[in-house]
Length: 336
Image 1 (tube, rainbow, N blue to C red):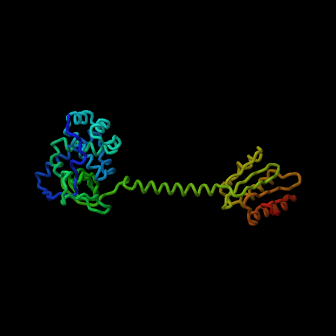
Image 2 (cartoon, one colour; image 1 turned 90 degrees about the vertical axis):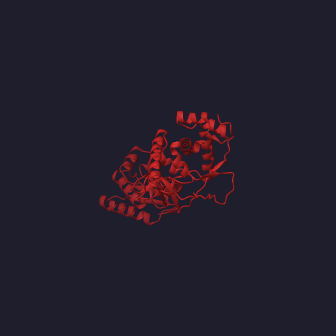
């Protein structure tokens, strides 16, 4: 058991190595061997490298994770639990280090990565690549800056394909960089290749804006501004939005419901629907004995032009059938 008190500030990463990396074949071969073993161990510990480059902890959090990893690597009980179970015992780690269980759970993947790298001497070449210094010493040589959006990033290649390389940086980040000619075990420099997770906030914000916009349009488009009652032997109730589009028709009678079921009316212009409905009323002999079809408009008034097609159809029907069907319109108090 490690009797040393946990110090979250004992060590810290820097962004910059003071000694330039020399890429001789022997060193590269050792790195390739270590990286190959690391990739196998990541799979064994169920660590998805995508999670590592999509969820990079901030610099201060990485430093805390580094110190937890070093503390665990020196504690026989804790390292035995990790290597035997291949998982992080959150509660035990929290109790022993004083860090919150929530913090350890949030960054469990990076913590496991650091524990594996620090505990196993197979990774000595990767350990040497990391720029780690005494966190309690002040030094003007220590550079601690988060990389910006367009900064070029330097790192040791862990995986690669034809479009990008996955690297580990001096400061312990796993990053995807755009680099077509990279090779595993070599150091490369390139701009970060952003994945979908990087834009997740923007995507969520855009989706939220679109949902709000769609909901607003849907609400406005489906909010009735005018109600029309058409009375024959059955009564029909029409709901019309502010754009003079019919959004609903209802009738309480069986015959009325049958007439509606055969019509295409939703989101059609009111003049078209009035004409169709009046035609159906006449054709289905639903005109009252006094030959008067009543139309009452409440809410926003309709324009005179909205009645013209219907009025012309009724006129043509009267001529054709030698009838005298009348339309009586109360357009929001204006008689027509």
